[in-house]
Image (cartoon, rainbow, N blue to C red; front, side):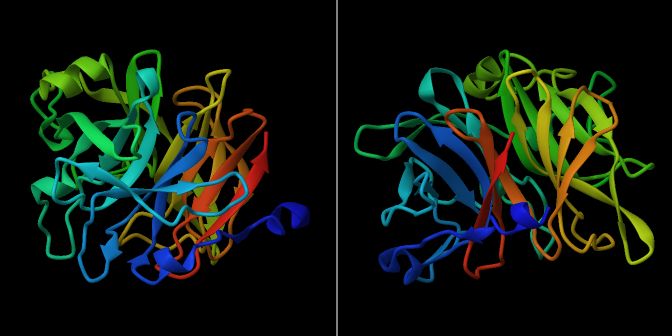
Length: 297
């Protein structure tokens, strides 16, 4: 544990980027096309302009590229929380769909996008979807009562999986939603009733200050065997966990295995390395120097 803790190191941010952009890293995925990890960041504030629609490229050596990758065709990307690989080298990016500090959920905060990376290092929108309108076969939101907060995203066998920071279940369990035929839904812009459903519920609970505190999901990444790496943090407005965690979930609804607690830190993104023998975890440091760790699998 001591050796692993020593691997939590700063991400190198070029001066031309740090001088104009504040970073709150919240999702990661490896891009074979760019030979880089692609990262999203909460509410990118670039030279005073909030919600800039951009992503960031991170080398395997831990250095961010100086120029962000701009998403063309949209004016704002409000609270992007997760990113994952889609078919044919494309990407899925999802915003939180959660209320902002004023209690509003504008359209720019309710976006699931499919993106293609162009040869000139820009991103083109191929399709989009508003997940907040999804309803189950009973006509009710499949995530239950409470405000939706989507922070994890993973894709496998044609289906898209969404990890929820909130709402937690009455027993403190965190939910993972599943959307089958995700490409068809995104390209049509329509979710049929009953299509989006709960795939798994599991309790990600840790001891803190003499109590058991249950975490929500901040990101997901499938391992080759079908199990999931899950990062967890306490949901907004809920009791603090004193620092987030890295978990392994072998099967839906199963008991998770705690791999690592990150005292005083918020793990927000997890991605497999290109050789799939390790994973990276990136931390949201609230605009301070960003951090990451490489975790051996």
